[in-house]
Amino acid sequence: MRKVEGKEFVTILDFIGNYQKSFVVPLALSGQINHKAFDKDSLRVAVTHEFADLPAGSYVDLDPITQKEILDRIDSIKMNSTDMLKSLYQQFKNELGRSPEILDFLYCEQSPSLTFFIYKYQSWVKTKEKMNDVNELDQKILNHPLMSEIVERLENQFPIKWPYDFIILELAFLQKNVSDTDVVNQLEKRFATKIDLEKHKTLIRQSMARLANRYKKQKWSFGKVVDDKFVLNDDILAVTEDPEFYRYLKDRIDYGIIEFRRTYHPERFLTKGEKLTLYQNYTRNDLIFLFEAGVKEGSWREGVSRAGNHYFLFVNLNKSEKVEEHLQYKDYFIDQRHFHWQSQNQTSHASSVGQNYIYHKERGIHIHLFVRKFDQMHGMTLPFMYLGEVDYVSSYGDKPMNIKWRLHHPVPEDLYIDLIR
Image 1 (cartoon, helix red, strand yellow):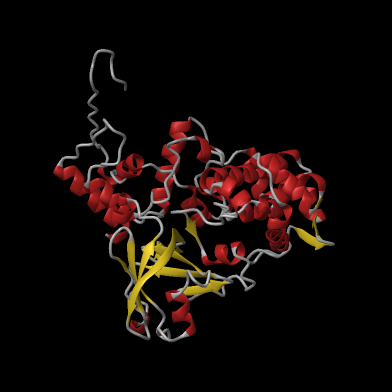
Image 2 (cartoon, rainbow, N blue to C red; image 1 turned 90 degrees about the vertical axis):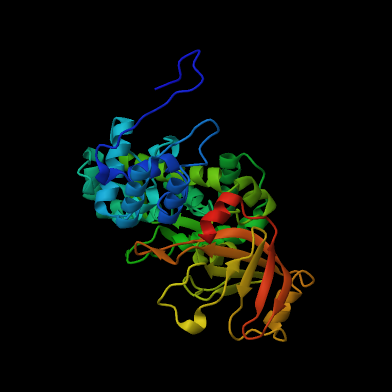
């Protein structure tokens, strides 16, 4: 449908014939490529305000009955249920006119969120198997246990927060042995920017070590590190020598790197050393890697962690009922610029940590604020959203301290409303 020449606007009447699938309306209108697409609260806000953030000149008028029906459906449905994902898959397939592939999620504006498919089914090829939509290559992959596990390991890294692992693999699939210099040269080629090897060497070596380790319960690794070079294992190399498998894996590498380029400002990351991007999601393990904390993945479990001269505050805005009362810290937004935060119970103004909070600027210490609305959704542990650095304003009380922080960047209004609801 389009506006006819000479007409000022077009009115679209859409009657929901199948009310059981009315939840698809807010998913479509809120945009599937944003990180909140499966957030029930965000969808409720969008429906209640009749999608007020649509482009200028576009309006949605939901009659009260339809609005209530959609809100009731959002409340009742599990957003990662098999029926829900099947519906989204079929809708995406219909829009494409063919079976969806991984790169379609990058280039189709109406693509659903890939995250829940991967979380539910472990990989895209296994998703297609569950949807009874496999082709000959899909079946070939499913029949090859090692290839299937390689795909699973790659896709479970999405979205990548640093490019080193994928760049190393991109090179290793072609030349087997990869040095620090090889990685830097490929980064410069991929991102068209000059890179200082010395500033990235430690992170590149960390990535090589990660690739040399086994992933979860898998019994293999991508390779080993010999004389500061990454060497691809022969079993993996043999898989990549199959042209169809190589192209399939290359698509995963491309997906990860292109998504990183779009989302995480690689020019700042690679040339200015800015390791974090405002309003993007990170796990504690991501930060252990990026800030070279030197501790084992999974070892950061508290609400505060430290790496060098960086403190990381991890806040659950809606406390789980499972959390013991003495751990129910009072953390909340005062306004878009200020945040009230309660320290760990052992921290006082006189303690070394308390003094670091108060005099962090004088001591060259950076305080980073990460928040999430809930710790879990549909059984999946959620990452934290990065709200930037904060500065000390004032505090009162001891064990715990109650601190007022001032954010370097005010939280945008739409995000602020979403977070405080």
